[in-house]
Image 1: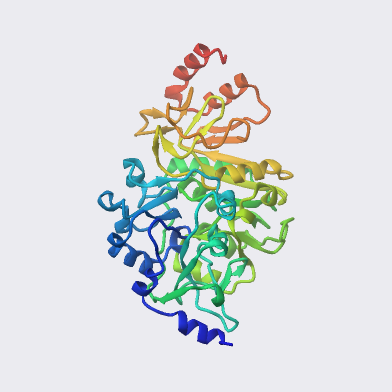
Image 2: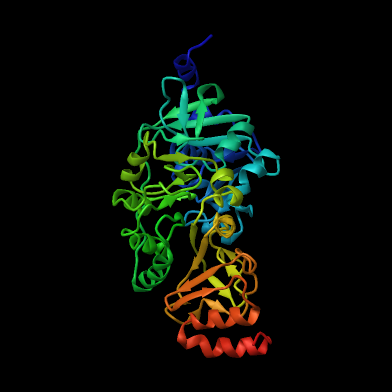
Length: 432
């Protein structure tokens, strides 16, 4: 019987060697964000004319690889579970696939065969003495894909942290591996202006000591984080761990002591931040990385008392429907975990969910609070789920309110230049 080190050496090879395991029409599953393996995906891009009908499924691609090009989409193309800067143009142009989903349910889609998972390409930590690797940067849906895939191919990098949680795979599950030493991609905190600061203060003032946080990525969520440093005994149960949360740990605001689910532990499913964050994750007993069908399941996350979810939107209508992922019919991002955590906060004892957005767009010429969502808009959080809507002009609490009360609340936090128009439209629609 081979030792784990002998198995490692037998599976070790080049990126070109690893590509030999691909077949036409395969679906390659890649982890979220910086969990993507650049050596493998670069080799795939360079060799993409060898195959037909191969797709690369991922949430939030970070680098614009060759397979995003329209001219070679018939060979290898992207299948977006969530759009970002690298993938948005191909999504809006129509030469990549788009798979609508809730982040919490992607593992189930894979397990039930509703979304193929023929091959896994993933970044991994170095193997430990017992033969285990950690998929710590993107645990998400990748663990479900590992269990289903015909071939599991790892890019092993010493800069990837070995984290705790349900994020480990054994060398016996690995088909092939390549080694790299490139630094992990770092993602800085977004810029924050006075509008973001104002919104952040409204939300921060409503967060009580002992709350458990889910914080999305963006300027407004980070503005909230920066105003929580004086809080006490905060906990973290989130999808993304980033540098904002790291700051709260370092200043002592996050202790996880008051959590009612996994007290003492921070929980996340992917990481996006700086080298300091990745170093913090390494063998840290305070942090556990779990698949998204655990972190994002509303029933699971909602077991945290005083769960607070903070997510951004692009547009909100007078019923409270949130269009958070498209500009009219053009895809911009995706559902991600927004609905998962809104519903989790609604289940939580003392929970609160916040949808945050500036009151206007395009230098103040367009209201983000609108009578009805722009035709074609991908609806994200429904009128039945929404709780708080926050702009720089205040907070609207919508749960339990009538359509008329909702319209009044939302108009009150719209930009003053658009309130008269919104009242006229509300009257025209017989909301008032």
